[in-house]
Length: 290
Image (tube, rainbow, N blue to C red; front, top):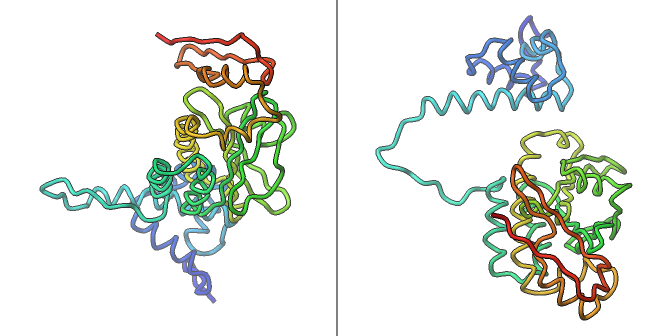
């Protein structure tokens, strides 16, 4: 039987928490504040028992506590690093958020538009997730899934009755966990122009509320928005998925001349729409921000 203040030998994770906490230099109250700021729900007494190795907390709360400790350890280690006499640059990062961004950015420049879904799927694997692109159609009524390796689910999703549509409308990262498929829905923007939603399928439901993972997914979606906007004029493979029916010849010309449907700054927002989307005959709009 374990003695007071000692972790059970069969639970090395509690031992790891206790040993790591000993190097943080934080009081228990200071650690609890950091843990609570990340979304932790255990009280101070439960936290004390967990650190002492007496009572474990739920797996998601354990991970939040571990993250709070690791953040502090990063601060402590940074303070004691030996400075170099000159600037030392690091090489290409290993799998992680920066590696995912570099994978997409490096490959997109030499790839045709139709390869973007596959490139995003590869970048998502570096985050430990499956990623699928959903673009908004020309009528702004549904999100269309772009085909990619292993992508499943509905080809179209409405804006009013789906999590993908709600994320698109509210510009918030939303989570769902239906049929054992934990997902994050991340808005894709090019500036102020809403292009669609990035579906991020996670390995387990415990990752849905990881604040760091959400930030990494947002970075990937932000870069994807700029890539999609810049590559749209190099082919029509992505464009054709956004169409529910063929464009009239006049509409084809007008859509090619249109600026982004939305633009703005921190104090001003401008949005336009072209109707009928597929049969426009002579009207268009233009603008310039000064």
